[in-house]
Amino acid sequence: MRRDDDVDLRERFARLRGDDQQRVPPFASVLAGRGIHRYAASAALLRVVVVAAGVVLAALIFRAWSAPNVEADFAHPRAHWRAPTDFLLDVPGGDMLRTIPSFGWSPRWPTGLIGSPRAQR
Image 1 (tube, helix red, strand yellow):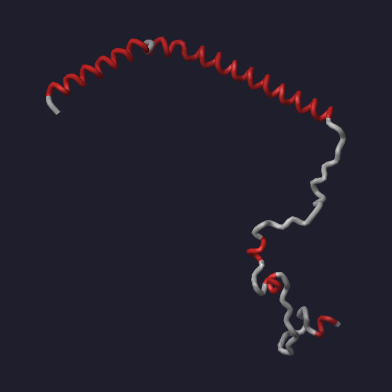
Image 2 (cartoon, rainbow, N blue to C red; image 1 turned 30 degrees about the horizontal axis):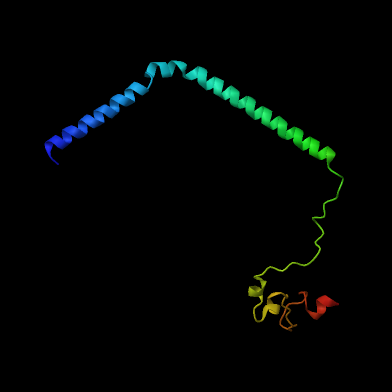
């Protein structure tokens, strides 16, 4: 970069900073008015939220009173639904995965175990 290019660039940035300083209010005035505007904005927001909650509550109450008395049938499935990917769970020997294994009796088992002939008497 040449030396005169830098000077031109500095002048342009100085003009931009000057434009910004003309548009921005002084910092002291911003600090002085901060508390009043913040309270007014939060109070207005609180009013809007309370009114909106009241409208929603009134709508829900009106809907509950005007709705017919119909029982929901959520707990009673009408049909057995099978997911489209259930075929992936059908593996060879899958019946062994769904049953509890049973072991035969052995004379070496101690007496009183479940499945032993003495426990079944």
